[in-house]
Length: 299
Ligand SMILES: [Zn+2]
Image (cartoon, rainbow, N blue to C red):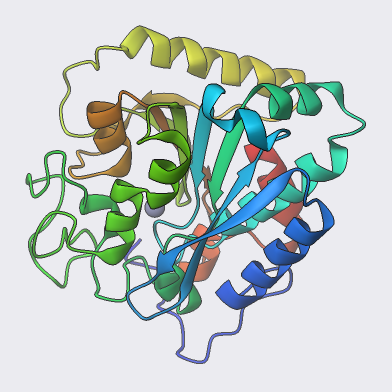
């Protein structure tokens, strides 16, 4: 990515894109409109004091604990702004279609989904990868934290893992998951998770730190096969899939962490790459005319 220009300091978000505040405001409106299907939970504040929100989609508050849950996270990396947009788009879509599309209604009734549209608002609003402390949040988790070459101990590196494991308020939020403690007694019902990124078009699954296959390698491959099949049915180009390490080695990442500690079937979805990008923005974020198609590909 060395050829792409850095953004100017007074960068304005292009058409269709939201600042963290605008995104939260749209999400609040969604919660008001569909209060019987979605609830909002303030998870905490970012390094620079911005709100981080989580949302739970469910059809019946009373049975939350009994149902399998999935967790979807956008914007671990701040400049991958399209990931938060895709979460908003998808939430609007499923809530709007709940009463008319059987498949969506079944999914909402049989499971619980937890959405964190923007984990890194500090990085998002100035379009940088790292958080307010210049740490790569997706190298800051406990499992294999600090293992080189999957990260760097140089604070100037884009993959700086931080001074210690879970040093960052945003990764602590995920690890402690107060919301999960409250509602699900610590992660035990969260069967699957999707961590959204951009900068490639691919689905990744554990491990990121070793070429040894994960214990559930066959299950990961089967689920990827089903995702491909679904894409073909919907007439969209399926993304290829592979263990994360095959893209490049990583350590202290979210997917390895929750898979190792909570046995959570976790994927990274890299949903967009600007092939002819002139600057950092264009590399990670589609232009307005491709915005809907990229958001839909995530659905
Ligand atoms: Zn990323």
